[in-house]
Length: 113
Image: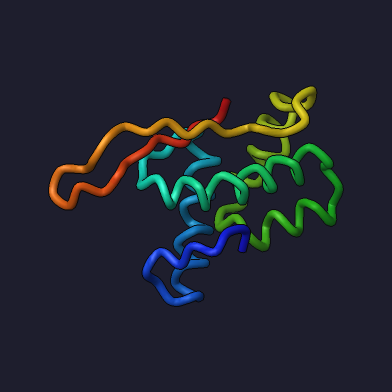
């Protein structure tokens, strides 16, 4: 795991939550969640895009072991990898949107650049 944030969850539940959020983020290209979750999602998503850019069978299998849907892996390896072929990193952007109504958690939008 890239960071040290525990997000108030046990390890297995936290890992499953991050895998699902990365999958949804790579599928939609945009996700609204809390700032701390965005900071955890960003390096994981960037690693998946980098694997897609390399494009080997071993990298596809590594991505399939983390991303929960096969169609998203195909999208990353075909479309997203071509989009960021010239870029050497920094595929995501985090924009803060203010506090959430109800519990005042700091919200943010993470999106592909």
